[in-house]
Image (cartoon, rainbow, N blue to C red; front, top):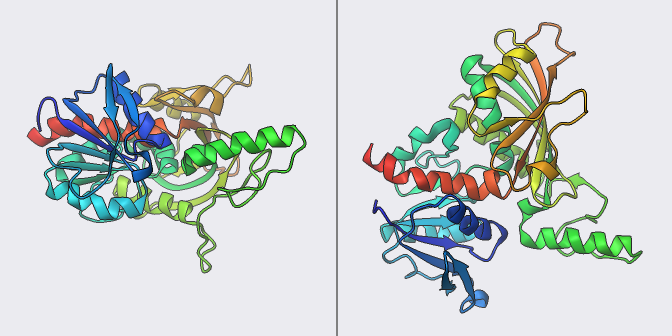
Length: 341
């Protein structure tokens, strides 16, 4: 890997694409040259990166010539078609879609958990689901200390997870509702303003679980490399712009206390404890938005488990950052280091 790699961003005009650029700039990621790739309708437009004007190019089969790292966030279909082309051209792909996550030959990486898996890549590294990342960053250090046997998660997922168009629909529908106007949903399946609904992915008619819930279950087991973990999850879309929240209850093999959890998480990478009972101040989307860390609070004993093996807590994280762009950029930052390991 070059010291100043050529970096391509696929889906640069989307919400995550914009965060790729902002995150690389903020973290001073080494970039020799940036290629901005999008659909034909965006080709010819420009954007700014480190004082330079970058012209957006139409994504095609020749886009990856000379590219070292390609960050993808343009949907599974685009990834399935173009990621192999990028790899054949010599690039390492960090893909934000679900296209390759469960491929046994593709590492599924959260750097705070399994950065060592980066070296196993064969050209593609998968970025996990945003709801999975939000839960697993704080659960992992606990799991290392006292294995987690079972976890129940209820998510409160922001519009950003469905892209820039969904974020705009939330703003527009809220404005219309406040003005007493009727707004017909264009992106979401249900009215979004002052409403919440089951995550807008396909429901499996046999299990009753939607695709988002299934992703969280399967990806947790792959990342933790533990197929024995029992996982129950309910994913819900809420009228928040860009930060996911989750209520998590987990059961460990050995007894665990609130003090144990706070002690473990106090020094855990990517975690910040926000847990003020006196002021009733805990993780909130308004505080998580724009932050790199996963905020963790409401840490308390699960009173339904008299054995003392279970803890309940509440977490919040910026879906566009740690849930997407930041995690991918962290992987890209480690590529030269891991390539030489």
